[in-house]
Image (cartoon, rainbow, N blue to C red):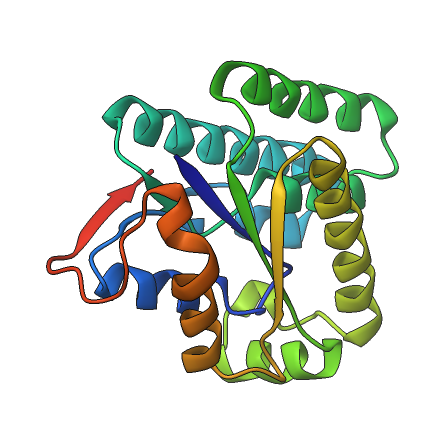
Length: 209
């Protein structure tokens, strides 16, 4: 069983994953630091946008494949749905690039299957921007509310796509709902149905890509 946490930047994906990890669930983390093109893209987008997005796609697919081969139920703090949204934005000027990257993700859906559940985290762009400024990642500091709103819309569209393919979706507004309430709902109505026991599991397990 696989759960993916979907959402745009600074919606709380890593925070939720950390709380679930503390309860002992097997977590697959996204590690942005492994992408050698991330800072280069800021300096020269035309040269590095495709390489950067391709690396993000390949890293996520590799992480999901490793977790699948492990065989245990796992939760990813990222989603292929959101990755499709970022691809559609960052390389929108090059349909050939979009086609190439979408094909990689199409192939991963065929080989790994769709997630059993997507936890979709949403947030107001203004709240996201405030979180971005607080966490201080250099490559995010140029973002503004229109950019974030655009990404949010694209993520919403991709989440709707997987819903249309039969994937169950549960959504939360992380700027309006506290983590205790979100976790209570997940444990009360969703996680046990997919092989994830209730809170209080001992131990911390992580799979990193």
